[in-house]
Image 1 (tube, rainbow, N blue to C red):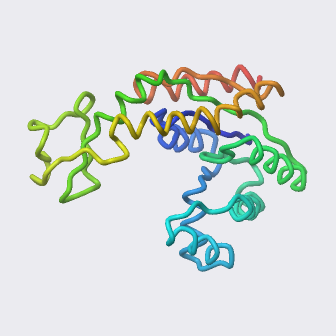
Image 2: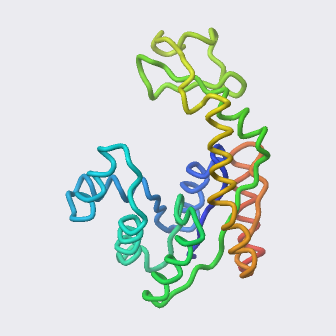
Length: 218
């Protein structure tokens, strides 16, 4: 099973990627994981990427693609893999095709998590993070603290991060529409795309994905 997971910010890609990869016994691969691994291991690519990351700049496509190529060449990817966060653009998708061609394999399916923009805004803008313990994250609708300004666990102040503000979320959605949504057309035209409703409890969404893949792949 070789699949790519796409969807807008707040669609639950990271959570679903973990569950789906576990279900099929394949590695979950995200660009964030690849960057961290290369930087921590001080690989030549990691040293290049670190310079851009330390400067607050985007890592160039050619570096990201080289890291992806290296990761997909590793033995644990031979039975399959799940890519989360790559490709983000059609040019990156074309590079992925080239990588898989060199590895003498092909992509089986692309799963699109479908979420209404208003739901994305509701999911992300409702999050509150603890200043004292940033790993403590609450949600005003789904997991509300007793006091919306105080962490129930450690008593730290709860605040809304800048990237959880509605105007920031709307901008992220605009970027997604402009850069990543064309992937839907790209893979749809090749008959490789499966859309799944990503609204509802996490377990329900996971079941929908597994069922959609079962039907698609036969």
